[in-house]
Image (cartoon, rainbow, N blue to C red; front, top):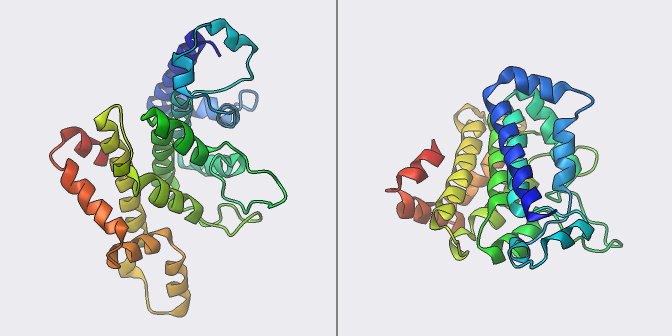
Length: 268
């Protein structure tokens, strides 16, 4: 895509996000239209290879993009994810979006076939090889926004991935904790506020998962204990109680940004 086309597409995605977010009627019409297939189309775009924003900014001849394979910038993928998140405000739509997210495998959750070559794509690769090098993280921010919105709408999707892997939310939790949150202070940021924005989205997600665990309502029966141990909030609770790096990072983040008004807004 040419740079001018990127700007137009991102503006259209932002408009779609606003319309779906603030108009329930429009959200229902767009999502349920079987010809438009809005969220399926957006997930198809997410599966396109990502293009480094550094390469785009250094491009001397923008028209050469016309002859390149279709590639999407991290900022565009971030806008796509936020647009999808707007549709997740409706719980019945959110359940379908969980399924679409799992099928898309933008975050690989299934065991990899050792006979197949490693795919240099997906949000894990793009986080480390594109966004980290560019020192800006719009795709990660969009992904965190989507996951939080889905959890707020549906709770923990216990059967997610059933039939293709061990069902549940844990692959997403491990990515959020180990690859999004724990390294957050070790990365460089062109915009220093972005570190706090990402941290706040992670903390809101962790807080909601702990609320969903409802420890006080778990009896000592073997069945309920087993179910509680499979809950992602239980793993977070163990990480806190064990005094792990997770707890250290949480306390450091809160102490670092506690006086920032914009950080508090992201936590609300």
